[in-house]
Length: 509
Image 1 (cartoon, rainbow, N blue to C red):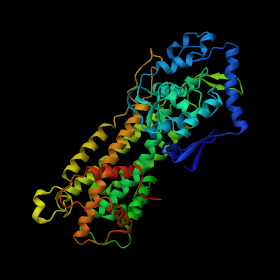
Image 2 (image 1 turned 90 degrees about the horizontal axis):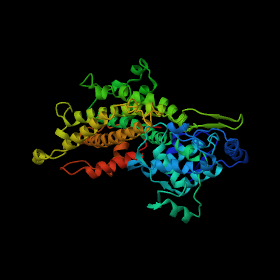
Image 3 (image 1 turned 60 degrees about the horizontal axis):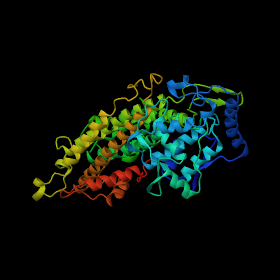
Image 4 (image 1 turned 120 degrees about the horizontal axis):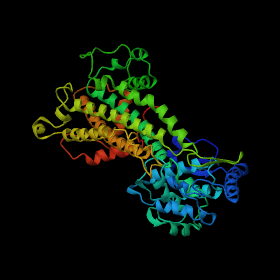
């Protein structure tokens, strides 16, 4: 790791969170004296309020609807431990390592504003968790997205305090053991620190960063697959004419059309075609993919503003000595962004699924063999090529489309009707990642099928494969040879998925 991401007063980007999640960048904390004093000043202001016996939500009161319950000063120190303890009820699968690193990064960035009342030492320990890859084991289920991600983030608070379990050096270990091994003293969380760690949108925002990054690459890959399918299906490249898109100039849609022209090496004059108009899954591909392309800017804005916000409650303005009670833990923007992304990604799955359906069907594939089989005539009757792959693709697409139902409209009144309108942002983010997983599977299948289709055209004597696509096919050739006699394709599909998720193929600048 050579790149550094500095947590402090600078804004973070989605790409920096992704880099931290992949361990391709190192986290460091802004260390100048002025910044450290800014953080310390917020913590000192909280101490002065306690000295004056002020009423502070979650510090001298109970939590949620229990805010009417006063906590005497001699119990204030015990309250943070109780908060992360009773929230230790998460269920479901554990977040993977990349997601957990992103969660730590998102929470650290939020607390770096100096308005949450936490110590510099807490920020340093979060940074150290990232630096040494000490990863709390966080169940992914149990958050309604307000008051933020309380239950999953309780596992961060608890492990900072030396409780529960972490993943460290590939092993599941007790947090206390790892603290001892690293020579650290577990933190005793001060008043407000457990609440500051838990009462916010770090989990949904972290997952949203990862989902955005995957969707951005998927957009480009789906465009490249479409170009391959235009060649395999002997499609009409005039559908992507620059003058045509000048008449309906949505920027993202125009960009997708430009990528297709680049891939297809469209030049004047175009050769005569036997077909005037292709089916919509080819002809309208820029219009389908362009909606995702045009939405990414808005989604980035929603995600990065949330990432760079202070989103716990209450907040403290040490300069004016004010305590500000509000609802910044509400994850509505992330919920909307992720519900939208599910819809956008589902449409990509559907587009590629329709292209694959054309490829395997002799009624629509313009002379390709049935199911893209490369078998010779003497064994053609017992070979079925991509038949089952197309069935699987239909299943993955159907699930991705089913998953487009928005989570954010399913608000549930919880916690004695204190949290009576919640965002469901974390569920929406998890849904979006599942939709991406399914659509990447569709993309892997359609890419292998498109590659097979182009190979079949070449074998039949078509030699004018545009240079950008020829280069892509050369990259694919090592791992994915043509399917001549039937073979089980699971291993190759899984390898293709791994290539997609590692962004193995450089696509467009």
